[in-house]
Structures are given as C-alpha cells and as structure tokens.
Image 1: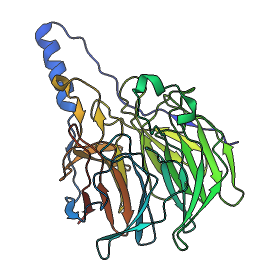
Image 2 (image 1 turned 90 degrees about the horizontal axis):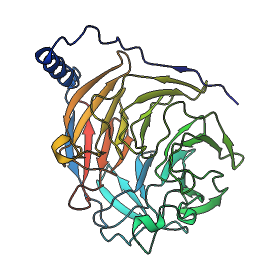
Image 3 (image 1 turned 45 degrees about the vertical axis):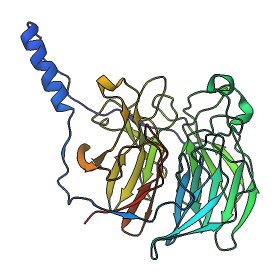
Length: 352
C-alpha cells in the first residue's frame, strides 16, 4: 500500500490588528473583494449549443468518451420516480444521438463511468424507484448500489463485474490511470461521508483499498484529470467545501492547493481541456441573500501558479448535477437541473 504525502498549501497569514470598527469594515471589504477571481489571462472560451439529449431533460447521469464518441448512462428523468438504466451514444462529428442497449442493472442516479481499454466501467450510485421522502430512505443501505458493470461499445454488450466492497457508493468521483479505475469520496447509508480511495483492476476484476484521501470526508465532489495529475475537491459534509487537491496516482501522493475563490459548492462539474482546468456548475447551500443557489460561473485553475481565474458563465444557465466529457480539443457540458426544472441541453466548449 502506498503512503500519502500531504503538503498543505502555503498561504500567508493575515497580519495586523483591526483597531476599530472602521478599520474592521475596511478589512472585511478587502477580504470580500480578494475572493473575487481575476479574469483568465488565457483565450476566452468559445461555446456552441449542440443537439439536445433526445430522451428529454435528464439529471444526475454519468458520461465519458471512448474514442470519438461519448456515452451518457443512467440518471433521472423529470419525474422523480424515473431512475433510468439506459445508454446513449453521442457522435460529435454529426451532432447526433443513438440509443444503445440499456444496462441490465438498476436505474440509478449519481453513478460513475470511466473508460479503460475501449470499454466503459460503470455502476454504483443510488436508486429509489418508489421515491418516498428522503428521511425514510437516507439510511436504507440497499438503496446505495455496489454493482459494477463493463460496457463494450464495439459489441453493444454488458458484462457484470465484481461488486464494489465499500459502502460509500453514491456521488463518488472516479478516473482512469494506467488501465485501472480509481473511485472514492462517496456517500452511503452506514458511512454518510467518505474519505476512502479504491482502485479497480479490469485485468483481475478485483478491488484494492488505497490510503484514505487526506482531506475532510465528503460526497458529491468534482474531479478531472490530465493523464498524470488528478484535481479534485469541493463537495459536501454538512456544509459546502471549497478545498482543492492534486493527486498523483503514480506515487499515491496528495497535495493541498489554493481553495476555490467562492463559498464552496456541491454537485459541480470539472473538465481538463487542452491543459486548462475548468470547474463550473454546482450548488451553494446558503440562503438566497447570502449567495446560495445553483451556480453558472466558470472558474479556471492554473496549476503552474496555483491561481484561480474567472472564465465567464455557462451559456445555458446555472445548474447542478450536469455531465461533462472531452473529445479531441473540445469539452462538452450539459444536462443537469436548476431550481425550476431538469435540463437537456448540451454545449460544446473550445479554448480558441
């Protein structure tokens, strides 16, 4: 088992006394203004609306790309009893959608989907086809799914794999490295907020527990990766989290970075796009008078300077529980939900 190295971010302490109410208000104003990120110095992002999801609005689905095709799996329709187990392929070259064979498993929300070797490894998440009030199902362990599937796009077929051996399977983060799948930071009935970190080997159809994530336990975080480095953070643990971390799967090491320049968020979306790290969408759990609600601002993280910038707004509007994937030099963000309804739009983002 690899040993983590946790290097806290170095931020200079605030020095000097307040010395009175006027000075105190001035310091508070400076702090508030300092939380506002500067515009990104990189070229502006170009957004284009693409064909909407053909099955209507959808929230809390999973998405990933295999080659030049993206796949959207599971999620919830507008009616909250409609937890889906379908599979759709999106073809950017023609801007068209094709329905594929559905997963034989349960319909679910907030699963994960990770491509390895031309196949997609997917599953986990939460299911509740009866949709009773959350307080009656929050601690019902059977609703937190541990099943694990391999979908082969070439044959349009599904194969069951070894179930996940951990409890926090709802709203996890996941990525692939060196032909293996990494999963962690989920929610479960018996372990509401997680710090566990697991690795799945497709070659051996087996799960291995790694050292725990060194930050606060959480669920509904966000994550993106560039092939060697992984960035993850945000999420919820009875309050919004805004911390940001770098993980190196080759060494199993963690490093805490500069936190996001906001009050934290849950159910956000992240993309690595042409060397740029983008975070957007999500929800801030505050009252409407203190910045709460769904989020539409696009933030950009610069790994070289450990700095956050503003990169504009999502053109389709603020939302949470969206999907994101990258094909070639373009990123795609869409679906999800806002305060009023579920959404089915899809937007392409290019960095030039």
